[in-house]
Structure formats: C-alpha cells, structure tokens
Image (cartoon, rainbow, N blue to C red; front, side, top):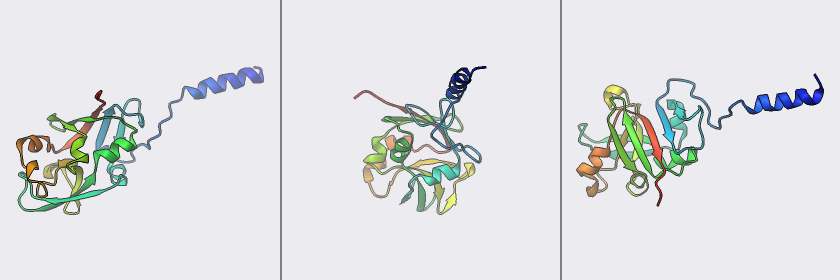
Length: 169
C-alpha cells in the first residue's frame, strides 16, 4: 500500500471515532441528561456519577419543606451551572424520577428563585429512601410565594433524568 493511501485510510478511520468532551462516569450513573446539549459523553446523552455532580459549583439551601420534618440544609448544583457545563441553550427542563413521575421546570426557577438539585441533606448523600439521589428543592423559608402548589409540584425527588428543551423566544 502506498504511504499516501495509508495516510488517507488512517485519517478517515480515526475521524469516524467519536470524541466526547465530557468525561465518562467512573462509578454508578446518578443522572442522565439529554435534549438540547452540545457536550456529551455518549452518543446522545451526558451521564453523571456523584463525583461529577459534586464537581459542579455547589449551592446550599437551609429550609423547611412539606416532605420532611424540621429544617434541613440541602447542598447541590444549579441547573444554570449544569447547562453551562453541557453548552445548552435550554430554557425548560423535563425532569423525571425513578418512578417515572415527570414535571417541567423553567430555567427561571433556578435564576430567579434560587432552586437547586440537592444531592446532600444535612451533609450526607441523599439515598433513594431519603428522597434522593437527587431532589429539586426551593428556598421555601426565604420566599413565601414559593409555598404554593406550583412550586411544590415542581419539587420532584428521586430524579434520574433531565431532558433540556430550547424553546423559541
């Protein structure tokens, strides 16, 4: 085979190998994100293990909520940082739980209302039994208007999937 033919074959052979910008999870996948994303670590998805989620900027909310007794401190990531990380122009999140419950959450809930996807409660990772591994939480004690059926309905727990939708403005 001629050197030029070998070079062309090598180029086209290597160019068909998919390259992903997001590292692959090293442990159990906790979250799968699809939809309007540019950065992935598989064909159509971005999958995250707990270490990858904790590498995102972390935020803290201390609040009461209707599903647990007392006041708790929640730590987790904002959808704003997640979308930045995935190079997404999404403005609507379709969030699904392990039991297939699904709700739609506008990105504005994270920007204007300070909501987070909590992965820890009172310093401990959230288990499935304890509304984890990921729970949508709002700072209910900081803003009275968040204590409504709209925001309670968006406070989904046992989250395992998010589909990002880019709506035309």
